[in-house]
Amino acid sequence: MIHARHLALECLVLSALLIQGGVATVDAQSVQTFNEAAATASRLLQSPDAKDLAWGAFTAAQYHVASAIPLLITALQRDLPAGADPYGAAELAILDALVQLGAEVPAETLQRSVTRWRIPTLILLARATGNKDAVLLPRLNVTTGLEWDAVANLLLATKPSGFAFRLLDGLQLQLRIYVADQPNALGSGMGGGTEGDCNVVYPGPGFPPLADYDFTWAGPGATILSVGPETVYYVRRVRQPSIVPCSDRGRVEKPRDWDRVKYVNALAGGQWLRQETYVTIVWKKPDDFRPEVSRHRRAVADQYRNLVFLLVSAKQLTEGESRTLTPNITVTVEDGRKDKSAPLPRP
Image (cartoon, rainbow, N blue to C red; front, side):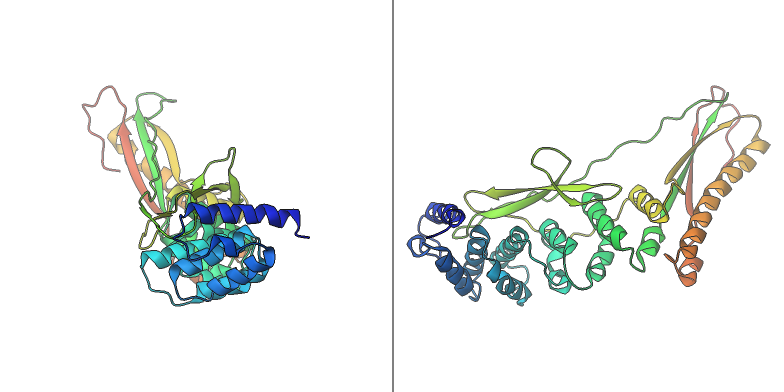
């Protein structure tokens, strides 16, 4: 007798196949039992055709065919045509199946996919075998926002060599000075920002329903991707009819300095550094202004150097790395004086 769970899964697969209007590689009537689904997944995952691969992955995921995991990994390791949309869709279907099956994939197998299908690949990297840090570390320099936070969370858990250096190298610190006529005056502060994302899709006729992954905030339907100073969540949606979401191939972005400070502080185990430091200088006379600015700048530089020393002591930075790191501080001045007849000296 077929297990009730298998029957339910068969219904899902049969419904999805019938929705495709007979254009699918798989004959809906041919998949009737779990064993037949496993055999179908095995056959399709060894095909060179992109649609076959996608249907094989879909069938393996829907029927929870754990025995198909090695074939899914092998399919992902193939040298498929780069940049060809049908094979990009097949790659997404394979990654999604591996996620749904809870597979442990060798990290080196995920090397290419992390630049194209970042969220399912990061989910898999979180439980990957092998040297996943070697795949994750380079991402710190070419991405930003929630993806960067997700990567940094995974690296913070393992603290690999080179992590602290990548957080600090090229870090830009801000010293914002507000010049006032009296103490306790406040400047205008900083503005906010938004995070853009890929939003182009194209139809995938003949493909099974494909999953679309998006970063999101905590809430109903959100799943944790990685935990850290900024816990990162994602949602997974299946598109009907089949729509292929755009991949992220070729995108390079600069990480945000305040994220880097947040994570280097977490690595050091305390609030040692601020990305932005706000101070108020009470205006007296021109000769007093520059020394005051220099004093505050030295304080920021001392915070940076103390953090570097602490990380060297904790063996998170090497002596050689520390010698190449210098505080990079940008000073901006906002003139809040009522009487501006005496110009502010250059800081």
